[in-house]
Image (tube, rainbow, N blue to C red; front, side):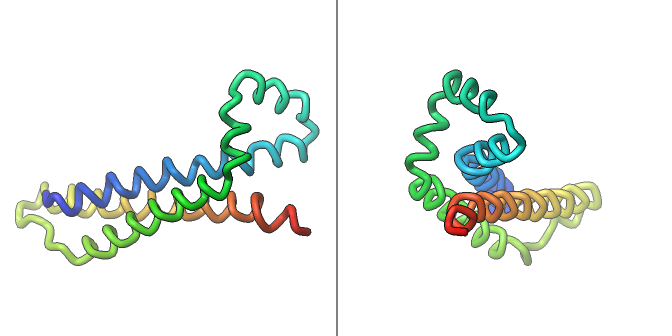
Length: 125
């Protein structure tokens, strides 16, 4: 299996991790307050005070997540036409990794978009 393909899997995983930070900073607090769990949110913030830092620095969080998504997207795009090995088992593994990478990248994009809507669009309405 090529190093480029393995790198695209790691990049997609890193993008998913970075974009999940956007969910923690913006979607989780808004959703908890919307369903009437403000007291639970207060308890969560007192137990995990880093959530406040993420919310205060949401532009930095979203900027980092966008950079990771751009990097992962470019690596996935570059690796999309790389040949898989001739061995049938390795070729199957190669195709499987490509599907996983694309799926992880899609989940990361969805998380980023959802976080951006909650952080920047809904407060303006």
